[in-house]
Image 1: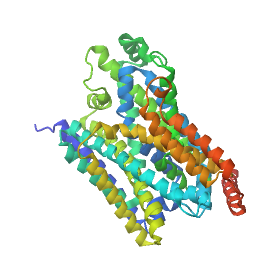
Image 2: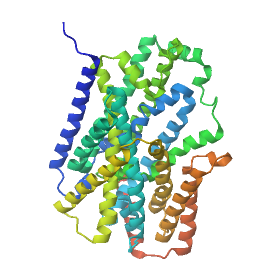
Image 3: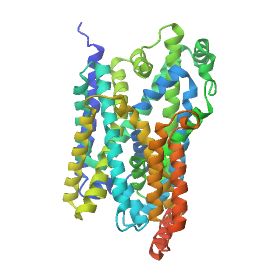
Image 4: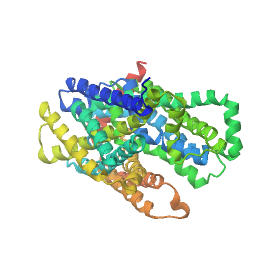
Length: 499
């Protein structure tokens, strides 16, 4: 009797997934008629789509490979970064999402983070937009490249394909649905990808625990390898814990996450979005941690250690499930990678078009013209990113953590102050952003003692202090901006009062 090899089943699952992504892109194409639609979905996202889109675009392949791999090697002390990220995400949804949604609409219907900051502070010379746009363009181009590198490596390690063939395949599919469907396509594919990710991260440890005979057997097996693997403090250092928790500060300044808040239908839906998003995140990070522990009990405890710890999720999926289901497990990893690429690709192109091209050319981007320019920008950024990823480099991959710190320290305090402090000045905002970015760059080059703390923390603090001090010296009352500031607060408060 003829039987299919596991690789065939996995390939079938991958084709089904990739086809679904393209179909969603074509569906979104029919709903995209203006530049605002293309870049922000016409501010029509529901809370579930916004929440899962933000989560999927944030986590990337780190959630299914990096985090389980780290815990597999070093134990649950590696969960501190997940704690920091979860707390940071909750604070972002609770205190930033509703106000940003309200204020971004009030200040000339801003559709990008740089245009929001510039409009909020009435900075007529566009220094904020140009500076912010360049920062986003440079960092995110490399950020997108790192995702493409991950995609190429994924196909190389999972299917034995040539790295560059895998790279082109990931780039082509992601570019296709992003370029065609814009923000709606990115958000709805993220929804599907987020569901795939969390389903896989729940199923793998759940079935693994059943196979091991229960939770007690799981913990006993892990303890037999090393009791410290179940300790949050054994082997951890104060600097390491502080650095891990500091990752949560990055959420306040990540443009690809913040635009999801701006795209909500109204500020009130941030409540449901927070509950859905944090619920998804808790399931995902706990699932990732439990996957690692099941891996330790299944492999290390039996003397069969994995060659590559970061493949523990893949190995368990192939061991515990039918090859077709295991194929969808693999597709979940690809989904995590592609969701991040597409979101960052769109934000980068929006900065290029809205905050650089539009400022210098004074072109009207309304209607079909803006959509065409947006698609051209997506294509250009994708091509540059693919060229940078053509020869994989650890330098590009390491830039992910550096870029997260750069965005968090450059934009985070500025966003918080612009939403909660009416006396932030444009000069203070620019000085703080530059100071935060420079601090991150310089701190990264220093080592030893306090300099081993993750660079986002000192960068965030420096930005906050400089912005407040310079604003105190340069702020000038502006009745119109005060009126808009109050209107934004009223809009957010009124929507919550309706709940």
